[in-house]
Image (cartoon, rainbow, N blue to C red; front, side, top):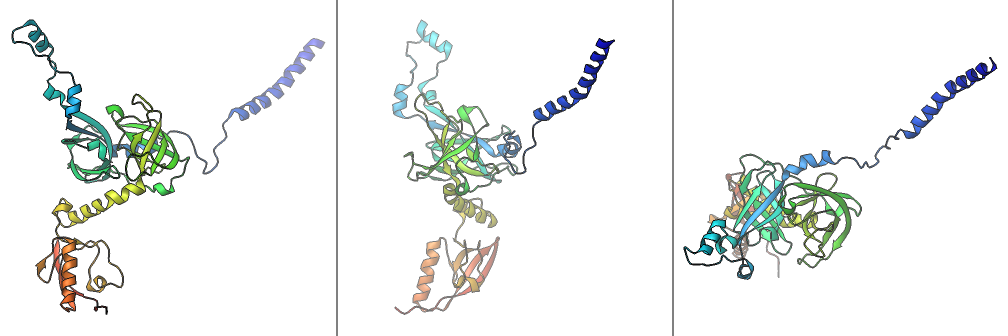
Length: 366
């Protein structure tokens, strides 16, 4: 009986203590909720999914150089009908003419929905044909709009049958060392691939181009990533992948050098602005746009009171055609020398022709 009472007491004590202990253990194992505003290292899928369709694969076909051709295997020449001739014909070895056409692969990103694409100049250099493959597998022929060897930047144009998803420029000047960044591209021709890393340094000089002010990014990339975008955590482009650090063998050690967006925008931005104005005037290329484009109206200058607006294209003055901005400048100077107080401007605004009168400033005493 005594033992029974003792055992009963132990059981009673355990029944009281065990729930409390289990509750304590559960409380210790349960993860604490993150503080408001604290960064979370979870999935980045919510960020990548909407921007990935704007990244494209770029392939170019180029003619191999004479030096490269000397290093290519040549088809052996044997008399027709001989055993060796039949042997090599059976295996259908490529001819030197076939081997002379080399294919280069790279990446790019759509920066404007009508199909304007930014990439590296070295991706398309010496290419005879440029093809752009979208994420859905559609391949489109691309046209070179402008390129700049000094910054290694190029703007391409494709003609899609629908508006394309595009991305926006970010502010690379505000990107801080230690910020998360994401590289999207076409490494080794494998298609759209995403890698993550951090901005590890700024203003790196790798002696590749005249404007050497690269962002250094620790993210795994390989050949074929060139021209691909580097996104910040807001999904905006803060850099363009241009070079990788490869001590030997061509493989990546996870160090990427990217052109800052603040350097890229002034290079391709004016071309895009001209394209916008050209489209408004009914042209598909700025090279077909004749006249002097008004990019801004400075307060206090003669253009303001005359009614000229930014985006106008001045195509004539005093009934004489104006094909280039230089011609307009020379015509105004000639009018001033003749003592004219005003000129008549022929302006194209939104596809409609207008005539405006601009009062010239009084001649300054010398």
